[in-house]
Image 1: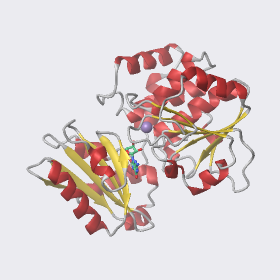
Image 2: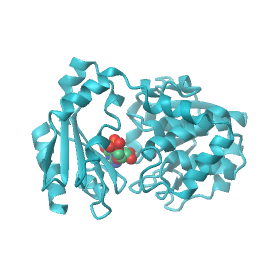
Image 3: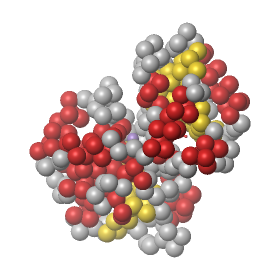
Length: 325
Ligand code: 5GP
Ligand code: MN
């Protein structure tokens, strides 16, 4: 394990010298997780490599439109022998999930490619760039710097990875480099209107029902600087919700004028509480607050998985935020 980033050239050597790869990402995968897997995996396949695409929770329905997404599978109990395990967009190794860790256990080399500042660099080789708005952009940097092939499926996947992690190229992590990347992907034939419609204008109705129920729990405190809402596990059963249905809904309360911090509390089937936090203000670092409870992420977007019940988790987290506000 090394705290230093490997060079992109060294990554290229690893890609050349090995034949069989598993590309993996975190549980409850989002667009950046799946998009980074497909982006790098399809490029490796185009180099003639054998690639497995593993995710503990499999492919979420909202990303089924991505070309070749059917390659994403839950890690098999009887895993094939792989040379290199590549974790993408995964802030801590445990976030890969137990089955995924077991399937990849025999890899001779672990590569950790990520953009989370809290990443403890758990790979044999690490490439962590916290200035990158999405792991998808790092994948793009690697592919283009090494002159690897960039098949159409990888092009679309990288675009969706970066678009979803930047709030459609809006957050201040978005740089000129991000727009140049997007321009290059459009030059390579990406259908902008079509892919954005598939990403953002195609929600199942149950997600809107969830939104309505969440709005009924919305509370504004700290003179309007703190907004939070909560979802009970029973709703999942009643509305037949999928984990991805709540993805991004927090942006709605983050967008309230005067709000500095938005928090989403979600009761999970195992009784744990998933806390999702967003800050609009660099002076309030939600990654630091998450870290107090064993979570992590980025300065302006972070998460925690903590013990329930809901009421005590809320009290602890809201108090910690109030101290900072
Ligand atoms: P989200 O709120 O969208 O689930 O996550 C926001 C950011 O925080 C993401 O970058 C995600 O990786 C990170 N994050 C979310 N939940 C956890 C968690 O339980 N532990 C850690 N270390 N990071 C998390
Ligand atoms: Mn990401």
